Amino acid sequence: MIAANNVTLRFGKKALFEDVNIKFTEGNCYGLIGANGAGKSTFLKILSGELEPTKGEVTMTAGQRLSFLKQDHFQYDQYTVLDTVIMGNQRLYDIMKEKEAIYMKPDFTEDDGLKAAELEGEFANMNGWEAESDAATMLNGLGIETELHYTMMSELNGSQKVKVLLAQALFGNPDILLLDEPTNHLDLDAIAWLEEFLINFENTVIVVSHDRYFLNKVCTHIADIDYAKIQLYAGNYDFWYESSQLMIRQMKEANRKKEEKIKELQEFIQRFSANASKSKQATSRKRALEKIQLDEIRPSSRKYPYIDFRPEREIGNEVLTVEHLSKTIDGVKVLDDISFILGREDKVAFVGSNELAKTTLFRILAGEMEPDEGSYKWGITTSQAYFAKDNTDIFKDEITITDWLTQFSAIKDATYVRGFLGRMLFPGDAGMKMLPVLSGGERVRCQLSMMMIKATNVLIFDEPTNHLDMESITSLNNALIKFGGVILFSCHDHQFVQTTANRIMEIIDGKLIDKITTYDEYLESDASIRKRMIQQ
Image 1 (cartoon, one colour):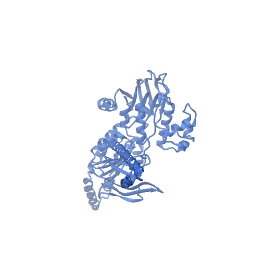
Image 2 (cartoon, one colour; image 1 turned 120 degrees about the horizontal axis):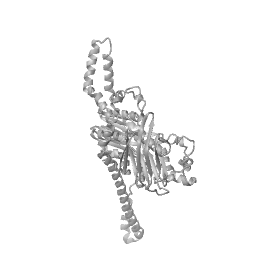
Image 3 (tube, one colour; image 1 turned 90 degrees about the vertical axis):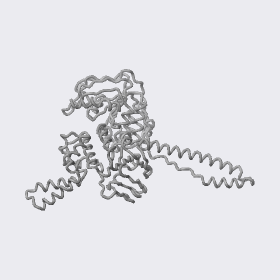
């Protein structure tokens, strides 16, 4: 059990949290949600002890071990992958290293023998003999192949490091597990493995995530941060959403009835207050009126951008033909003789763990990269807009958001352009922000604004939900569901893929699997096909 007791955190005069009291108990998984800037990651740091509250305290059951998913990709570069995972239980790792040092001593003494025996006992009690196999099982489940287990962390790429750090947090059955965006940079297979792990995990989990499907799958409770308070709800994310909306509707309906009663009393008082025979009744109604209080309904701090893709031109029957496309990058053939044809109603999700293959294909189709072999042809009625996963070069110029967006608009009018920005949560002077100072989420919203203002009938998205909050993901998801054109996209958000795509493609070892189906149906029916391709 871990609890926050009267926790307040202030930055100057602003209170991020005010007298928060909440208890997280064993056997439950809590989804910590809230708008961007509400303090989700900060609250996890308070619970972990990394950050001291201004007032109040965090208490934990004596003797329990807490594990916190770390995001520092370089902290463990001097260690092997397996050692990094085992360091998730620091005491166990220290015992292992101390034992090794004692046994390697050339002048092994009797005292060394006694110390080694003591350490061996503690090591056995902590299931130390299973440590390496348990760590290896976790790594394999997350997609880190066995041949990488003794590799130095410095030799891994960013996505692989994320998986190792996640395995470290999960290792050794911690009593309290804090996870901040654990699905970021994980492929869908790794996310599925993590979901099953957390469903079967018997201790306390507190997780921050923007993945609605993930929260629905693993959470038993939702802790909602809004207006410096945390409200606890039983159930998963969808249950929280329905409950919170129902509560607001009920409060509005109760206020409506109270307002009708107020109006009725006021009319009676106004009509009969000067009437001697009705004066007692008027006085009685005045007292009743004074007792009626309307419920305060504060609008949520959450803000939903307005996302709506409206093609300037209807798309024709001939959309895209790809023939025998191949591309080699750094000696690896990421695309190997890829061919497919798109129809006017296709919304294609590119899934699977090969991020480079998906990005390479998107860049070729967007005209940013040439294939080594093969060709592609867009239909004469098509127009394309491309959302790049790596937007570093896009936002390096020292110009304002408004000036940047104007170059993509057919109407070169600042008021028109700033209207788009306002709908994407850049009101007023926010449109004068310079590109290099934008946060990750702001950059994504700028890119989405660009895709809207171009009014194309084909949209290509490479991981658009990265850096977006839940509200923006929901708005984008809904916009793509109703979009009348063609979509090619990759995304790690299960619900986003399932509700948007009607066709699934996966590239394994450069080869293409292409199925007209939903994502859930693809996962169920094509597991054996995917395994065969991986083995070949």
